[in-house]
Image: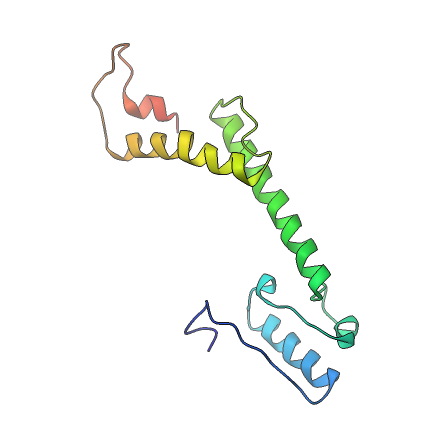
Amino acid sequence: ILRNDEASKILVVAHSNAALNDLFEKLVDRGVEPRTLVRLGAGARELSLEESYSPVGRVDANLERRAQLLEEVQRLAHALQVRDAAGYTCETAHYFDVAVLTPRLDAYFRHDDDDDDNGVTAKKKASF
């Protein structure tokens, strides 16, 4: 079900914590994204996996992933010599994408080789 429709939500109920934990371990072994799994109930502590699949553990994992992505946005902004704090929040990262990155990519992929008033081509402006 998950492979056919990744947007689907599946609730699994098992007769024991051990059965549910076994299923969780098999899902992780088969490559199901850990961020898509949440384990409810007392048996979550008994999982023999590296990550925590409790609701609090999922929130922590998502916050960690958010911090990593914002750091990448900030590195990209620095590489493009954008002085604003592009990787400070998700909102500033989105603004960076809309106001800086997308226009540069559009100009680059249009193959706009026409010089502007200063003799600079769009590919040079994109600075990739």
